[in-house]
Image (cartoon, rainbow, N blue to C red):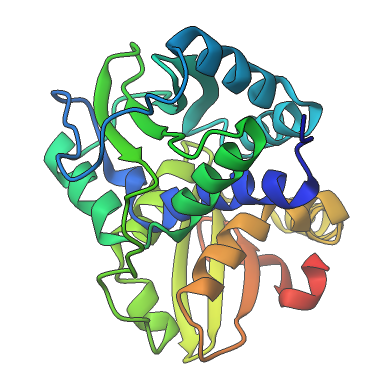
Length: 279
C-alpha cells in the first residue's frame, strides 16, 4: 500500500488556496448544482472496497495534519472535511455563516478558475488506491450542511486554465471580487481591513482600529503593535493573503506593506513583507 507523501499533502493545501482565488468567498446558500460534464463514478471495484481504500487515504497522518492545518487557517470561512461516499472522496467546504451571492455565482467562479490542483489531487488519490477511475467531489455546503454545489473531478476531466487573464498591477488585483470579499470577511467591529495600491507591485494592507486614543495611549500602542507585527506567527498568518495576491501577479514580485492605524489614521505600526519572509 502506498503512503501519502509530502507532495500530496501540499496539493491538499494548494487546493484550498485555489478555492479562495476562484472567488468561492462570495458564495452563499442555494440549491444543489452538479457539473454535467464529468464522468460517472468508477466501477472497477465494489463501492464498499473503494470506500475502504478512500478512508485509508483520508486517515493517513499527512492527510489528517493537512486538513487540520487548513481548518485552522480558514476557521473564519470554512469547516473543511473529507469522507468516502459512494466510492468517491468528498472534499467538503462548509461555510461557517451565510455569505452574499448565489449558488449560480459560486458555480461560475469555481468553473472560471484553473482546475489543475483538483486534477492533481484526484491523481494522487488514484495512485494511492490503485483505482484509475478514482473520483474527487469538491462539495460546497452552507452552514447547515446543505449542499450548495458539487464539482466532480474524474480521469476524464479536462485540464482547464483560468478563464480570466493574469493581472498586471496591484490596483487591478484589488478590483477582484475574491480579494474584496476576503477583506470584508476578515473585518470586524474592532478592526476594519482595507487594501490600497501604492505602486504596480506594492500593496498596503491596512488594519484600522475602530477607536481613537490619547497621546499616551498611542505611544504605548506603537510599541505593542510593532511587537505584534514583528512576531513570526503574525507574519505566517499573512502568508495565505500574500500568496493569493502574488499568484495573481505572475510578472511581478509583490511587496506587501502591513499598516496598523487608529480611526484617525494615526500610524501605530508598519512592516513590509516579501516572499523572503515566508521561506
